[in-house]
Length: 241
Ligand code: OAD
Image (cartoon, rainbow, N blue to C red; front, side, top):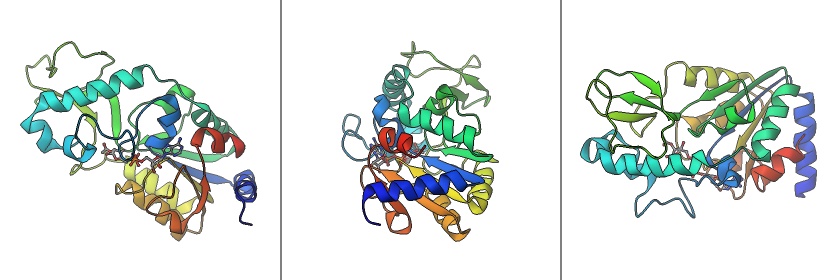
């Protein structure tokens, strides 16, 4: 039962029999759409790591620098289209009666592909929030005309995403945790499993008795606890259907 083909058929049967499934995705699912990951090769922007820029402190210190990074990501994402991995998850949702897609990605590509039941744990890069009046608005301006952008009220706008040290959107984590605890099967796709609380959803599913399969080009921090289907999301996910 060691070969990749055997493991894929085990996962395929588990999904075929599942009444409820949760899929947790990370940046790796969008790599084949041309969106860079946060860690590993290509993860750096200029010389900065995500942990240095995706924080309220970095924004307070240098909002223009933080916005330049987001503007760069928005330009990459604006050109990206969903890939076969995103499309396979739409089909999986169609087949399984209780299905929830939990994503750490802020790129919106799952919704573009047609997935419906989505929890965006880390917000959306396509919304802004005013740091003064707190108004949240959709914003598709690419590239941003003024840097850093400002609200109608005059205060700075920030991306409506979750930064290190901030809480997740109310309700999102609860819904994701509840579904993870009671699902039959979980797929964990393209995440390094180092950022919590998202990374705790896999262990919650294992604890609840689910079969948990991980799809990643390389082992992650938590692979030990899952069945690893090593390969690209855009190839492995369609093979599971
Ligand atoms: P990471 O950049 O940490 O990890 C991406 C994962 O995708 C790695 O484990 C890669 O091995 C894997 N990978 C790369 N290409 C792949 C492919 N084609 N198919 C499958 N897997 C592939 O990204 P995340 O785990 O999503 O948060 O990062 C978690 C959070 O950290 C992000 O949501 C973001 C970041 O800082 C915030 O900004 C709050």
